Length: 331
Image (cartoon, rainbow, N blue to C red):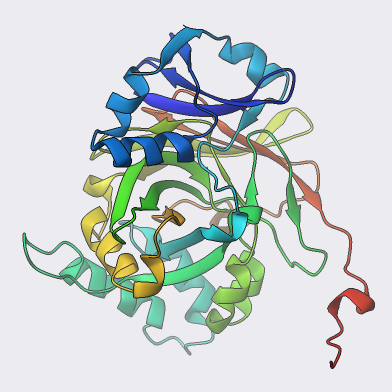
């Protein structure tokens, strides 16, 4: 089952449920957001899927929503500051190769910290039941204001040195009233980053990640398949500039999802009741690693089964902030 959020032609918010093939879609009666539906499910002690099935209404036309730009991200929070975007890197088999190339020169030809971190994941990223594995690389990406709606443009900051795609799967969570993380499902994602800044010095990774991100329209309920196979591409002037397959799912990862979730939610800060978390699980496929330089107007596309809709976003550049906006004033 999949859930999508959208706006009615009059602007009112709504949620629809899609079947496994995406062929049938119905509006959920009386439900304005995935957040509201999740809260209702928790309060009644039922699964998110059960709560959705109990609110089935009339059929809706997803194609017209897409054409009219009425699709929303599959999760958000009434207060964007309480939707936290975070992620982990060096989590996929092969993900260290591109990162290692970025940092090799600074390491003087020695093994980089990135490769050491990746090897730690290979050795201890999939612990047994009841065990705790090695912690992954972790980063903060922003809050809910950084989520770009399906089809909307990424705004690369004026000071950015690069704006490139990262095709990923994101876990979607809500924290219940007892402070327990509840996984709602998974979304296909583009975790947009600045790889030139990161290449300059790996300690600038934190700066390179403070960018927007986009989720595909669908929230996939239930378990993520162990083997997810998709395609990432860049379209320029109507033609494919770059295209490459990418893999995700635990069969293609050096960490288990359970281990990544444990090392995120072990912090009290991330178990605040009512908060939403969007956690990106990483990738091993980047156009930047193939020496592709993006430019304004390029369109990023990410697609992968079992998701039925693409993550599709053009690239734009934000206006520079004025000195008055940045200057710190004393009170």
